Image 1 (tube, helix red, strand yellow):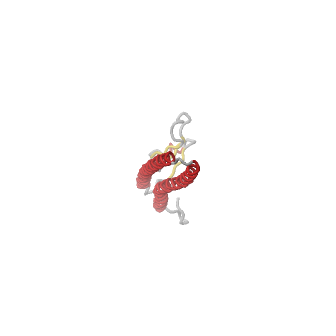
Image 2 (cartoon, rainbow, N blue to C red; image 1 turned 135 degrees about the vertical axis):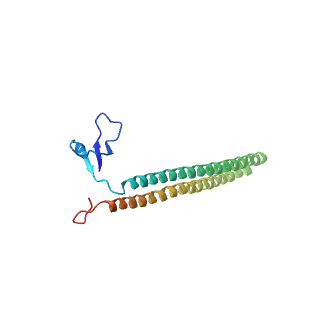
Image 3 (tube, helix red, strand yellow; image 1 turned 90 degrees about the horizontal axis):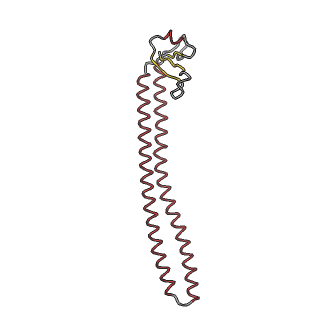
Length: 174
């Protein structure tokens, strides 16, 4: 039998219920806050299975973190490339404007450069958004796949536990 006992009010930092293997079940049942549950035959295996599920969850979190870091690295590299391209274009634009002596042509060049800068800015924002979306999608896929796998694993573990419970005379489980 597994005994669930309510924790004492002084033990506020610990769990509210404590499960223990209790050889003196009658003594435990005599208290106000104890409930006896039958120990299913598969309970020890279930504890190990649950630990393995949690270990795989942690491994998936580590993989997702690694993917997020790789995605951020790629994103920063893309931003650095964009900054370099922008600096080079800006320097060329300043040189072109300084070389133009005709005021009317200078105004025309300024507005042409402004339109080009706006187009480049929108294009660069799209590049950054695409890189970010790819990185986020990879991270989300890792977490989503693990969540679905953990649900399947937990269901299978619980079904094995239920199968290990003794049946009652009417075919139900205890």
